[in-house]
Image (tube, rainbow, N blue to C red; front, top):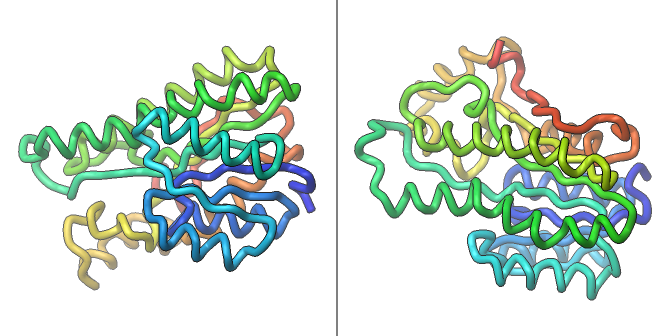
Amino acid sequence: MRLKDKVAVVTGAASGFGEGMVRRFAEEGARVVVADINEKEAERVASEIGKAAIWVQTDVAIRSEMDELVYAAKSAFGRIDIMVNNAGYTHRNGDMLKVDEHVFDLIYAVNMKAIYHAALAVVPIMERQGGGSILTTASTAGLRPRPGLTWYNASKGWAITATKSMAVELAPKNIRVNCLCPVAGQTGMLAQFMGEDTPEMREKFRASIPLGRLSTPLDIANAALWLVSDEAALVTGVALEVDGGRCI
């Protein structure tokens, strides 16, 4: 029960890493807010978790929807202790010059500007409560960029730098800010990362990971659980690699 009496909001929580987080957090005693643009899947995840969860359809790129998400969380559970910026978007692996402006703008809005929206919405609440924890799902792409995902890589590098800067500025308010850098896993974005999803491409990708496998939602959820728990009370400003050694 490492998150007993805590309230956690997780964006992009209807699938993949986000779904793994809300399920793991709930197992450890948290009440969770399943936020996702996919209404049907958000409702499914929350209903499977049970009374400790609510779901909210949220487009993190829109400030008013982030405010509505925070209002729903406060109305249901009375507080917000943990904010996880997990929603993400990418372009398909390929020529950087062939990524159109609409896709670039979506990457900017979901991977970068949403962190700003979330900070504006939750930092005042956490400050009044005496502290809190903000966690962002970044990527190994932000630490060790590879060709083919240039604009996605850049957005995750931004997220890592924002994490470190926020951590320093918010430390006097007892708000810890960290991020995770997962290696790609079997989520809905895997095909985009690889360019094409074939057994040959998966094997090539696995071969670049020293531990020999892709990440799982549980791998990422367990790392997130530690970072947002009181066990990591002195940890802030870190970009934790959960990557099987890929960044080495």
